[in-house]
Length: 79
Image (cartoon, rainbow, N blue to C red; front, top):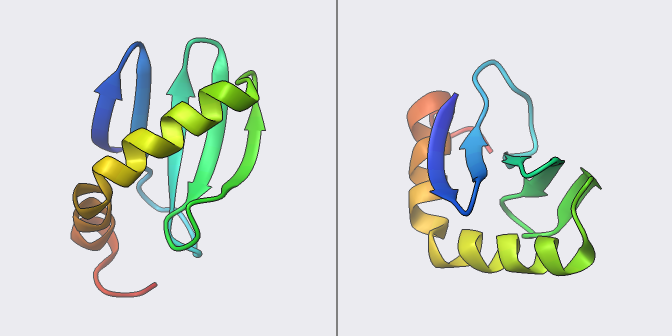
């Protein structure tokens, strides 16, 4: 897995051998979620509160270029 960001016990990463659409996996503190890189919406979530998801999205938005760089490093330009 290509970890992009780790903060407050939460790992934001791009999984190897994954699928489209481009998205990030978020795991930690008893929660799991997936965020679409194009729309910045969460695709699914369990164990995170709505405020957790808003905070996670803010972190992703601040680090969006690194997130895309990691996606492209693993998958190339397909998106």
